[in-house]
Image 1 (spheres, rainbow, N blue to C red):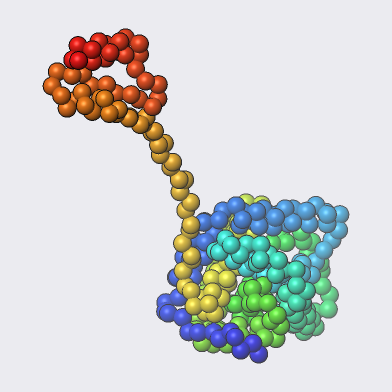
Image 2 (image 1 turned 45 degrees about the vertical axis):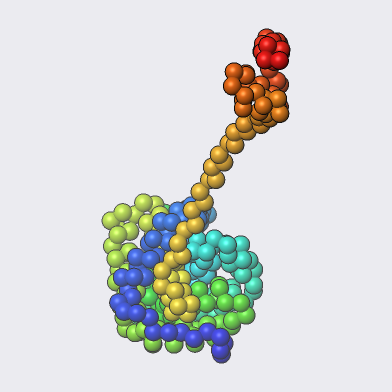
Length: 304
């Protein structure tokens, strides 16, 4: 077990805070998360087009969704870290190059998909005749299958399992699962699962009312992944709120006005001290004109 990570019991109520902070983090970096949502929508459309000539049963797509969801949330966790701490954008994405990250995601997805297959087989043992229900006929079907596994994955691995894999170097799947489940117990497993179930049901209702070619489902999946990151940060890093944005203000350079230096000669000082004498000033920038020089000479001769 990784001894450097100790989950804490966060301040309550935390559900509203996690939902709010996750939404603010997404709104603060619309380009990053918008690209993720667009990629999910493009993947769904590509899958529907590729499988247009095949008859695929829905249950197999649902099992694929169980395997795919942890991998998606690992990616979202890395992007969320970069949106929260701009200086760690590339470092968090570089962590995804570790093989242990993706093996950890598969370590929770594959067993849950196998368990789903066993449960399905036991449930239909009394009805061997099974008619395939054609699936992947409409845009959003693939994302709907991924969305259906949200409660299962959170219940099996914990709400912080995927961020631990993505952000903690060297952590194993067993350690991440143990720490995540410990964090859920400290902060109320029933509360976290209730929150997850309500969000999943609400997302299904909204996506049914506003399908938007699967983009609504894609936005929900990314949002829930961001909330997983927010929960991890609050529980393990002791930081509940997002870091303030650094606003770079342009520096205004004030132009400096250079004034010419004025040099007063000894004769001019003497003439200014004596009454009736004219003051002669010689400037370093160019001197007096010819007429003024003659008047000064005449005035000096008269005084003599």
